Length: 186
Ligand SMILES: CC(C)(COP(=O)(O)OP(=O)(O)OC[C@H]1O[C@@H](n2cnc3c(N)ncnc32)[C@H](O)[C@@H]1OP(=O)(O)O)[C@@H](O)C(=O)NCCC(=O)NCCS
Image (tube, rainbow, N blue to C red; front, side, top):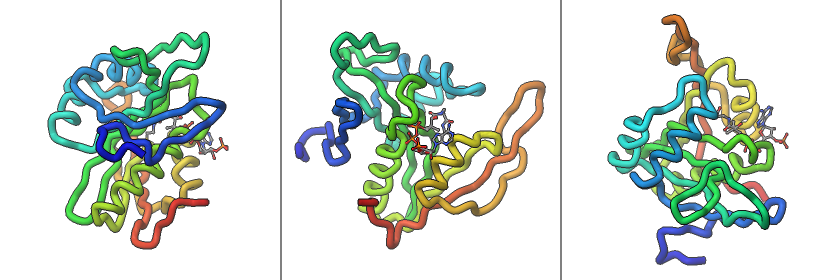
């Protein structure tokens, strides 16, 4: 455990021999994350959205690893670390709000979003949050399955919350994870 370093190994994990760690998202990461956004979303966050997330002191973390032998990573930091995924969250008075969570396409269904959400829950709980909130597009069945698998509860719907093409809008499912009694699953 390297608690004095910005690199946190608290939620360090190994999956398929890949060792990962968290690093804070900085302005230097914005260009590569903006490219990953385009690969992940129909309506991606822009560089400005990402800059704002970094500047406004949100809890924005990258999940990175050293490349596996022979691995050519599509998305990597300037120092050559593979970007597996990232999340952005905002702390309120006694609640946290997940604003973005993304896993690079080639690393999906390997448990990395679960690692990030559990690390976020630990972080938020440690700052006194009673609840972790999020919104997800109604059509995003994969993400909803992820959140439900992690015991998030369906709370309600925000009508016309997300943009679609042609001026149309899509509803958001609002979900929450109560943190008061939450424990990291064994
Ligand atoms: C949604 C996303 C973050 C999930 O990341 P991930 O690392 O693949 O998720 P995990 O491997 O931790 O999944 C854990 C469990 O969630 C569920 N799950 C995750 N993705 C799923 C999918 N596409 N379809 C169905 N179930 C899914 C499964 O139960 C899965 O367990 P299993 O693989 O053993 O069946 C990823 O697909 C992604 O980045 N999508 C694009 C961006 C996005 O939609 N972000 C969420 C915005 S609200």
